[in-house]
Length: 406
Image (cartoon, rainbow, N blue to C red; front, side, top):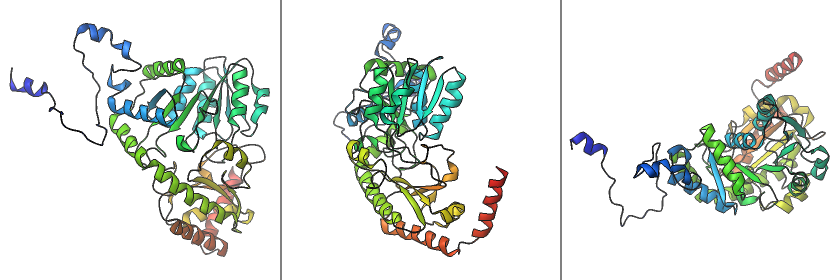
């Protein structure tokens, strides 16, 4: 056997006696089999074994097992992102002629996927008020196959009555898909509330460091899981071992990060609610929030994401306020160690009737000391009210001109 062949066929070092706290990163595309018969029968182990790197490696399967455990579920499927997970679930459960209900407060890409992609394939899409609760029964007919819930809405923070919606959906044979990214399994388990499938964007709290994209679908129904797995194979959806490893590492500190972020966010929310520059704070853990009673019933804690609406006299200065912040970074997404601010102009949303803020700002609280974050917000509010932000007047005039053009 020549040197080149020996190098290609070299076996890994014996790992006897080696034990690490870290989960090994097992990369693979091709998976080899000992015999022709084993290869021909490889799909017999498609759902719980290994057939091809795209469909699972020991690293990604370890992550799926951890997420399943968090949700007290039997089945989990990891996908390249939260959005791909949602799109897969809806694609697997819907066909032409079916109907899907989506809350108006849902993640924008979820709504757009339904109204533009699914609708083009003959699926009827109906948007509903997220606060409708049991009233959703009036919207469900015998063609309604899926009801999407997202509680709270990741922008306008409405809490949904998931048990009431589940009861109405199941009474007509429909399924409920719950986006649980805001709370994660640590603060809420929609499966315990009756949902059939939970989607969580692990890019957020689980990953926790703004450096990975992964989503997960979790269910207790084996038939549903097999359907999701089958469609994911046909769509070519899988996750890399490296990305799965990053999330596995993030899970170890997620409880600590969530506790710190949630406490800091609630401190800031209470403080902002008393500021004259702020008209409203949208945070379900605040006693005065419209969804607070449901939040107390269904949630065990709050994450670091909430929104604020500026007072009417500052509505034209939203971007001025955001630009004045120095500790917060401007960007999308949330749930990382860094505090992020997202201006309302980044969202093209329609929330529940009568509940839509004029213009608002979303904060994702990270691990910085809350004193630094409060000082940063206070300085931006003070300069806003004093009119001392450089370029403020010019920006307001520009915004008003844009509004006229629209």
